[in-house]
Amino acid sequence: MTLHVTNTLTGDTEPFEPQDPDDVLLYYCGLTVSDPPHLGHARSWVHVDVMHRWLEHLGYGVRHVENFTDVNEKIVARVGEDGADEADVAENYIERTLADMRSLNLLRAEVYPRVSEHVPEIVALVETLIEKDYAYESNGSVYFDVTGFEEYGKLSNQALEEIESQGDPDERSEKRHPADFALWKADGVDANAIEEHRHEDAAPAAEACETAQTWESPWGEGRPGWHIECSAMSTTHLGDTLDVHVGGRDLVFPHHENEIAQSEAATGQQFAKYWLHCELFQMDEEKMSSSLGNFVTVAEAVDRWGTNVVRTFLTAGSYNSQQLYSDETIAEAEERWDRLERAHEAATAAIDSPNASAKVTDDELREDVADAREAFVEAMNDDFNTREAQSALLEVATAINRHLEGSEDERADYRGLRRAVETLEELGGVLGLSFAGETDGSAELAGDVVELVLGVREREREAGNYERADELRDELEALGVEVQDTDEGPSFRLPGE
RNA sequence: GCCAAGGUGGCAGAGUCCGGCCGAACGCAGCGGCCUGCAGAGCCGCCCACCGCCGGUUCAAAUCCGGCCCUUGGCUCCA
Image (cartoon, rainbow, N blue to C red; front, side, top):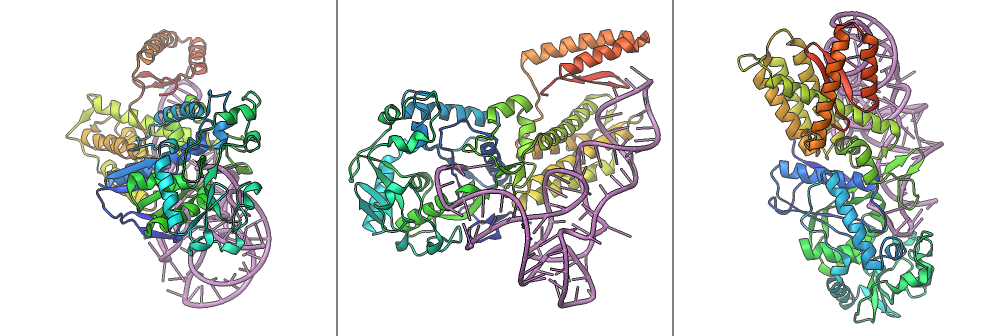
């Protein structure tokens, strides 16, 4: 089966056919940089990353663009708390966000465009829309006229009559239709607009608003509207028609609907061929979100569980189905990752041991690995079914364990195991999982110390002092060191490995 | 109210587009056995699902059609 994706625009699962297989144009609606990224953001990033990796695995070239919204009232609300002015706050959060992305082992996008650097393109786009009569100026602001775009509502399947008025009430008098939305907003930021987003230790609202950025335009001084930025930036970097536009489910309306209206009105071309939407986390009864404050930051999660566990967790469901966030579901992801890693370690150790022989052949091992590989490919081609893909990886682990169990007294299938390890590394790599382990000096020293303690413990065991031996093991485990007694003597794993 | 996505074992979560291989995957939890000084890891086996409810189509339905109930998301900033 070839790659199929579920397109929000049509509601169907369709064969994936980019305009040019050498350059799949992928745009992801990035963050407004006004808060630390949380696991919900990470979930979308990781799924986009897996899509990127899988497309490359299939032989496509991928041009991946991901924006930062660095002009926004919520950013202004953080002035005095996270930076000296709007631009400074944004810069701080962008740096933090990029660091979080690296910690998640995400492939880099080709460009991370920022709103503040694309104001001329935004102004030009707004001018085009006015010329084509899709937009109108009102008191120095410019609004998109939704009644002029016949297909308005096609992404979210809504009729214009059903759509309630958006935006703040003050704007409504300036609009012709309640669903018209701002392309350009006159003047700076009003203190009232940021009040609800302010934390206690931020600068006073009026003072913070002084630092808000504004730009000159044909309609006077002002700031770009929220939706127009993505249209301007995606067109600038990827052209009029994207192959894939990805974003969170919560952005379908109004943001993505408005992007389509602006872009298609301006260019007369289809804006994006495939619209993919990442579903949200569910925390018991409600979604995880910045505005609800019920989130775990990316930095906390990576620090606590490590990149591999976090990625295993985030890909434990399909990108387009809701996922439950709880201590239990994370613990399960940890178990799955541990199982993969242990099998990988065991296989690697067996390959390096004198027991491994190129003359041994275990057909069952080889067949199971080949089957798992096939299942993985099928799963990923079926709308990036990462959960099924994980299952396939776990089948490889089981095949390795079974072979090793059966070959304890006999010899190990060197080439079969090599193939299994390569499969784990290659396919695990598609999910962004890394079996490389810790390599910095502190881990080595810790390992040496643990070996020293285990040596002492072995002598206690030989002497029959099991009580003392168990104490030592318990103490090591309290430090997070996992100890295992095997036929070949004790083995251990350091925390976070 | 309108739009969208869902309701599958103790938990989590595939399968539903293309009806039969689903007497329902993978993992976790639980129970036996092997291994072990013990534990863990691992292996083998088992337990737990009338697939939200009602009706229909069909030789055959978790999968298709109709109705109903419930949940989540969007309609306000939000991945």
